[in-house]
Length: 448
Ligand code: GAP
Image (cartoon, rainbow, N blue to C red):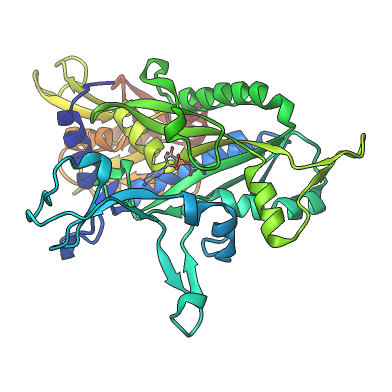
């Protein structure tokens, strides 16, 4: 990591806004705490993270089935899952301004904001409520899901009936989850509305330790494949008191975030047969699995790797952020000694823009026409950007900040020789490539 400090965090937040990755939510109205909007580069980065996850954990495997369940589900699901009773925050409330605070983070009896008297600690369910149908009464309450997992459990029987999978197998889902978080988050680390990438992996009870271990390895493998240094992650076992209501054993994989060090990146939980058993009981539907070899009928146990998309994004941004002083010879002839550049050293597969195309000068119609041709033909193949503002040096540094792996310049020689200069982001090395070979050149480099 480039720099492990609050300072680095501020730089990342500022870069994200400047370059169109992440904007504060509802900004022109003064914002809304713990909400953010993704800009054009943020949405590409998020999609690339999800694509990588889906390919690795669903498409490349034959034992995992993907689904996309609803955000709104029958509220009985949240009773059966134990969320109404067990998914709680312990909070105190100010009797004067009615603001709530986590009881474990408030030592005094006075409101930190207005000095008002605080209530005794009370249970608070951090699920967002809404109403389904024309009447707003207690019979029409529905919840925005606080985890994607439950859509997987309630579709367990559907998957068995459609695909007849044999244990062990998993069901995976990527989707939004919602939590009424009252602790102010560190940028996108803690949001009200976030995306989870979850797998419920169904196994025989006696094998849970083996599969728990296997999943630790799978998680590490994927995280490091994103370009994350292994020394920046570690595992932490949950104490008994902090285990979620459904879990018998949990370990978090933590990442060394630039604010405050190692924090939860993802959770890996042994959920036993808690969910299938409860849904079976409460729905009256038989959710047991039948082993066709032995005819044994039982509730499978579950190992649950649960990944947060935004925390992945924050990790990738922290890992990729880099500041460098440019040496005069490295990027001739425009760079000056002592000039700093900021680079997001994304792996090419994650980079929101794969290449940027520039005409050397913006006031030469021949150059513009040729550069436009290159841009239009590459645009069909990759996400690419066009820039003709300012001098080439400035355009390079803007793309370095966006994490674009390649910059392609069309100059006067291009008009004669049908070739371009390709400049690589990290090394700043430049080479001449024939226009007709550009697509293959980039394809090869982007897959490295
Ligand atoms: N189904 C299990 C589950 O939801 P969790 O530990 O509460 O477990 C899993 O959440 C992951 O979801 C976390 O490790 C984190 O990556 C992400 N996550 C949870 N709450 C979040 C929030 N408020 N904002 C962003 N990501 C969050």
